[in-house]
Structure formats: structure tokens, C-alpha cells
Amino acid sequence: MQYITHLVLLVGVALLSHMAIAHAPELHKKEGAEKPQCEAMSKMDPSKMDKNDPVMQAMMQQCEGWFHGDHGESEKEGKHPQKPMKDTHNHH
Amino acid sequence: MTTLKTIILLIAIFIIAGLGFIYSGVFPIGADNRHSALTYWLLETTRKNAINTASKNITVPALNKPEQLLSGGADYNDMCAGCHLKPGVTETDMTIGLYPSPPDLTQKVSLKEGELQTIARQQFWVIKHGIMASGMAAFGPTHSDERIWAMVAFLQKLPELTPQQYQIITARK
Image 1 (cartoon, one colour):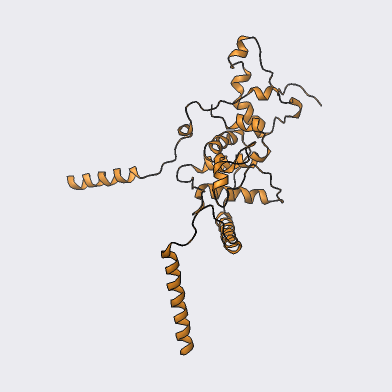
Image 2: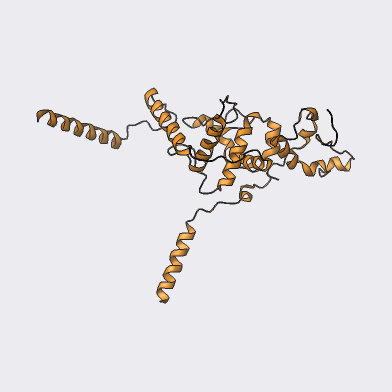
């Protein structure tokens, strides 16, 4: 009985060691990987931006911290980035 | 009977000649060689039809979420851009050295109505299963379907991205 238990455990370990398990995105992170260069967004023309565009929404998510002042030197100098989109006014 | 014997003999000669060619090692296997037009047509047609058949029953989910672009974009930048390029980059060592050259996925393609869904199905299948005897790996064993669909969502937006937009979306925070 003990022999069978050991055999089952051995086979189980051997099988698990060969399983290809989907790896987490964090494993792709590299040391010193590029941060999003959100300064580029402040140069974009807000009138040409579609707030419903997933591309724009994705960029806004990436740069959310930057727009709230989390960008180092610029904040110290009192410079605050202008958020390119704000859905509070009806321009029509 | 003589005709049958002749046919059998020809088949045998063909098989022996084929085996002789395979084992001789004279076939130019280098990626810096080029297929003949016939061979290229044969391989390309087989590839396209195989992918089309294998992917035709795949259901395409919604691909318009920003989270998909962030996930798929980061994965694309890490795993795919070296071969399939990114905005502002027109060639790499891989695009020059691989044969056939990997498709440039930053290029806009004019599609007819309904083709977008077909392309999405095929892209999903290729990313998940890869293409044998090519440089295209199968990412299904290491990536969930959800992550692969996120890459497909990103591929659909890639041709319209500027280099700045690409950098922002694909950066891993």
C-alpha cells in the first residue's frame, strides 16, 4: 500500500513538473522597463480626441497618475498637466 | 500485366529517388534561400486554407475594451514586436532574416464588410496554435484565451497607432 502511495506521488510530481501553466503577465516585466511617456498626451489636441475610443481610454488609464500630479519634477515646479479630455461641458 | 509491373517499378523508383534526396542532405535548407514559385504557392495556399478551416467556428467576443488594449499591447510589445514590428519601426533582424518574412502587423489593410470578424478569428487561432515549421510560436500553452483575445483586440487597433500612442499603451506600469 505504501509502495502504491509513493508511486502515485512520484507520478503526480513528474506530471506536474511537465505541465505548461499559463504564466502571469508580471513574468514579462523586465528590470528598468519603459514607463508610459505621458507627456506626449499633453501635446495632443483635445478636440480631436474621442472619449469613447478604446485607444484613448487605454491611454488615459495608463496616464491617470501622471494627470493627478504624480510625475516628479514637473510637480515640484508647480506645473500641472492639462488633462486632454473632460466630459463636463456640452460643446454642441 | 506488363503495364502494372511498369507502374509499380516507376513508383518504386520514385520512392527510392525521394528517399535518396532526403538522406543526401543536398536540399538548400537555409532561410536565406528562396522557394520556387510553385513551392511558395503550395505552402502559402495550404497555410491559408488550413488556418481558415481551423478557425471558422471560433466565436469572437467583444474586442473594444481599453483593458484588452493594455493587456494585449504589453504582451505584443514583449513577444511580437521583434518580428511583426511596431509604429515607427520598419525592419528588424528577424524581419530580414526569417523566410518567409513575418507579416508587418502595423500596416493598414482594407477590409470588406464582415472580414474583420474573420481576421479576428484567424489571428486568435494563429496566436494560440502557432504555425508549424515557421517562426510563429504557439502561445496557447502559456497564455489563456482571454489574454490571447486581448492581443487580437490590440492587433485591430495597431495599424492606427502613432509611435507615441503605442509607447503609452504598451508600457508595463
